[in-house]
Image 1 (tube, rainbow over the protein chains, first blue to last red):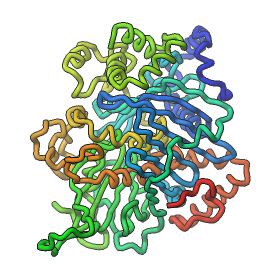
Image 2: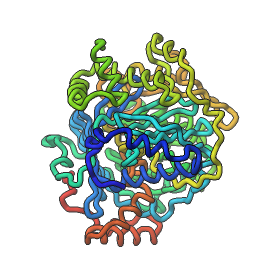
Image 3: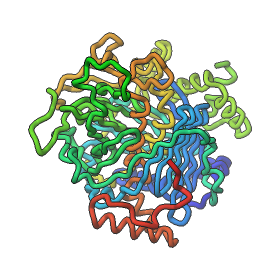
Image 4: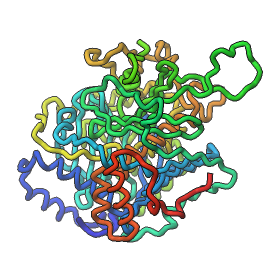
Length: 351
Length: 234
């Protein structure tokens, strides 16, 4: 891996050199290993390098400009994601917590991160299993933003997950362009870097939110903890799309809630779905004649919403609000949410 | 988009725009929402026309554009490519391919969720039925399907929208979920970081992580793993 030279500098590297190197490589040898190697390089680069880039996030014909700053210093990672298009939203995360600044909502969300324990300790080894559900291959190199790029395609084998196409910078393995695709190869979302630098040092100021927080409401999500004592802890998805497995089971008091929710995480090794099981907040049953203004009641949620490149689906299961969220097709969050039931009781599915 | 801008964008996407002009184009894109939208469409068109991938536009794009794309042959047939079932592939942070799409979802939540064309643009297909335990209505079937009536959007800037799902609540879910769909949350990545760590700070983190891993459940955080400066008052 090269040093932290700005990628911009390599903009001027004579293409012929790179082209010659590529041309001398046998096109078909190591074809099977190559995508894996490059994905690992990308992973490593994303996790361990400093970078500061501006990218376009294209989805549904809309484009938003965002900046990502990522710094690794002495084992501590700090990352800042900023919307440059007016909302002023920022997302800052470090080893300890995530903070989301939503100036348009006059709100700051804080999420502790100290619950990596179970994730570390119980992460299933998917290994080759991933290949059951995704096909991974190299496509011919192409150029992105002036750089020669390895093109890796990850294609889902069914409709329960999305695929990816990745254009990885030949020298840094950074994803200059990524596409999220459905099982038919249609592009759902695209991330395209406009500029990307990999400086040796990133000053604190580049990681400091520009948001003025005076007068904003701070919402601190509760820490996750072992949900064994919770009445909701027995809830699990009784059926899962092929390849999905439970990777995390915990409980957490979400912002605005008084009772902890069970938080389950299911993954096929690539895609991740979170399931939240909560007691219905402030149920209003039995007081139908009381029309005085009271404590605001949160009505049951039912339905599907798009969140970013994924979906959220919420439904009621015997008085419990079950919400599945993930970067997966709508049918996957619906499937999982509908299958949630208490393993200590009977089948609570509404159907 | 004027012809000049179109040429600039095209050159930019092909990596052939000089740096000086690139800067100007980006500045222009950042302050011009309409240009960004055009750019977004154009980027997808260009992708297909250039044949860099077999990208196809999802529904919801202007018919003219769709027709233009439909005329383009696909570069490769995904079905024709042999699967590589023998590849051992360590799971990578797919959702974190660039920056963690859940994080992007939060940052972009408002604009995205209320986009009126969103439904039409959904590239979701009808489930094959065989493996799904319930029948499901196609999302792109139009605004009159029963499913459509049940669907909700985030009413962040639509005061009259039915508050089927409070925006804040959806945000909270995505936010909590983002921990597990980010680079930092991934096992292999964390190991990478810890193995490279050489500071006292990282050592404490490693010890804490080891302790938690042994416990196999979430426990109250060990002292010393939080940076005081990162704390915020509620």
